Amino acid sequence: MITNSSPGGAPLGMPALAGGACRVPQPGAVEAEFAGAGVDGALVQRRWVEAAVAVRFEELAPVAAFPVVPGRRFGPGWWRSATTGRHVMHGSQAMCLQLMLLDRDPRVVGLAARPVRLIWRDPDSGRSLTWVPQVFARYGGGSALLADCPATAGPAGERAARAAAVLAAACEEVGFTYRRLAPPDKVTAGNVRWLAGYRHPRHRDAGGLEQAVLEAFAAPRPLMAGAAAAGEVLTALPVLYHALWSGRLAADLTRPLGEHTRVEPASAAAGAQQEREQHTR
Image 1 (cartoon, rainbow, N blue to C red):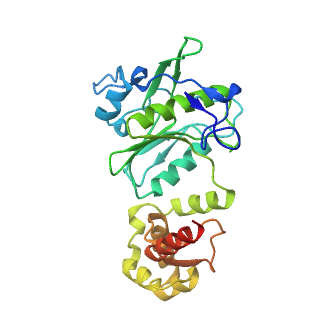
Image 2: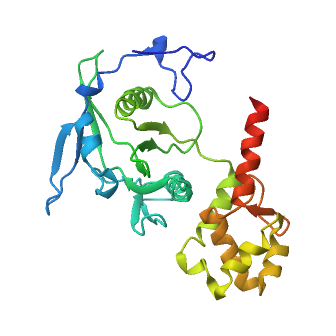
Image 3: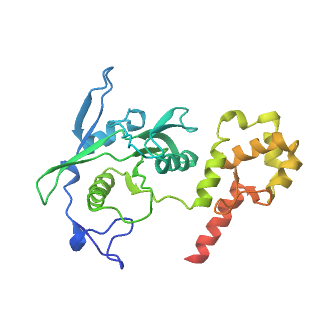
C-alpha cells in the first residue's frame, strides 16, 4: 500500500488520492504488452518483472497510436532524436518538449514513445486496468525511465494518479523510475527549443571552428563576445549553440538566451552546482 505520509498529504512526486492511500497490486502481478520482434509486429504479453529485464523497449514501435483530437491546434508529430539518430513519435507539444529535454540528457542512450502497456487487476474493484506511459528513456547504466508528459503542473486526475502509483511500484521493483514530468518554465522551454535547432552533428564543427569556440569559453564570458573571439560570428554561433545543446558548454537556461548570457565550460558549471548543493545541505 502507498500511503500519504508527506506534510502535504501526498508522498513526494505522487498525487494525492481520495482516502489518503492507494492499494496497488504486487509488481509480479502486473503484465506488460508490447510489439513483438516479428515482421507483423503482433503484440506480446509477459509478466512485467520479466519483460523489463529482457525487452529493449527503446527499440519498439508504439503499442497505441496518439489520438488526433478535432479542434486541437497541435496534433501528433515526430521528433528526430540527436541521441539515437531516429525519429520518436509524440502526441503533444508538452511531450515533444520533454523529448527534447531527455535528448539533451547525457545519461540517456535510448528513447521511445508508448512502447509498452501495463496491465493489472485493481485490488479495490477487481477490474482489469491498463495504462500506456508516453515515454520510455533508457540510461547508459541499463536502468530506465517510464514517464508521462502532462501539459500543466497541476494535480493528476484520479485515474492518472492511481496509474502513477501502480507504475511507480512496478518500476521500483525492476530498478526503473516512473515520473510525471512537470513542464519547464516558459523561458527554459524557449531556450531548449532554440538550442534544439542546432542539435544536428553538422553544427558541431561548422567552418572548422569547434576547437576555437571551446577555447574561447575556457573561462566564462558573454555569449557574443566569445563567438566573436572564436572567428566569424555567423559561423561560430551554430557551433556555440550545438555545444550548449550537447552540454560541452553551459549557460543558465532559466534566463533568456542572448548576447550577454554568461557561457562557461560544462565542468566549471558542474563544479559550481556541486558547491551550491553542499552549502544548502
